Image (cartoon, rainbow, N blue to C red; front, side, top):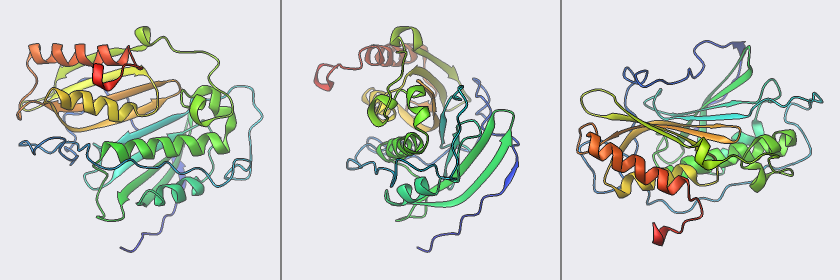
Length: 283
């Protein structure tokens, strides 16, 4: 498959990933995430793909645009993986104040995962520079469906961000894994974890999870949901500094979750998230 040339133009931001409330997803088109279990009536996520190696950046010394910032205040790094807004591509938005370069090394690292950046845009607003990438799989030309690959995309972008902007390391939970400087403050998981479930139309519910970030969190969340036979139709996964925020459209046999099942799901997630070292066999 031929790769599309990527051009990025600097422009004012308009509608850059607004914060999601319990009803703001209703007008969005459902994304085609792959099924976790035998295919239910609606498309969902799949967890059967092999482990994906996260490539490292080519250089840890240079900044991609050839510049660096010496200001004392480091902005909060943000990586948003959006499966809702585009039916044909996975949208990734990256923000680090005004410090980001063109992310050419990041795009090359994504190609090593078997992905193609079909479109890139850069815009500015009061919070800084926002870089948006539309990503598809090279093998199919379609958006990413496997949660393992989505997590590999997230870790690849964060790894490259830390490599080229090491000052961001202490602002990210994953700085302890990828970066030269771990976070100076640890997040209390009990305090940081919030789980809410809302009705979101006649055939689905909206699950909102906020918790302390860690590697593999996206895959873990999807597996917990799948373990109680709930289907993830689409969603968004945001990394904001030390925290992770997930918004999943979920259903049970093509219907919204009833109150009893909502409670089971919330309890399962809360139990796992507050015990991040619990082995899978004891869960």
